[in-house]
Amino acid sequence: MSADQDETRQRLKAAVHFTVGRLCQKLGENHRRVFSRQAIAAIAETTFRQCGLFSKTIKALGKKFICQ
Image 1: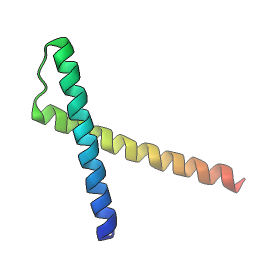
Image 2 (image 1 turned 90 degrees about the vertical axis):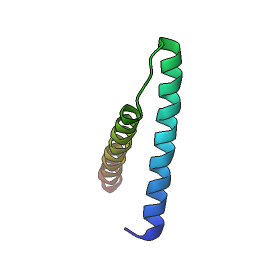
Image 3 (image 1 turned 135 degrees about the vertical axis):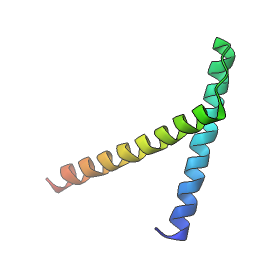
Image 4 (image 1 turned 90 degrees about the horizontal axis):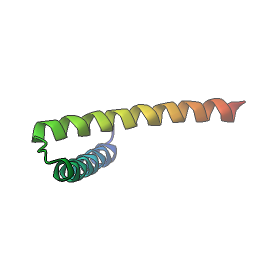
């Protein structure tokens, strides 16, 4: 992975973490709960990995249908 790709990946991870944190904050306010930093980090990491799997699946499907 190039330095450029690594930087982009880290920026995407940071954006996902920020967004998950904001969503957890809003949900916590609505339901009178507090999410720990560890919980937010775990949700963000799981979300980031799942998005990676989705992108690989979509890429594979795109290749399959384009090649036919």
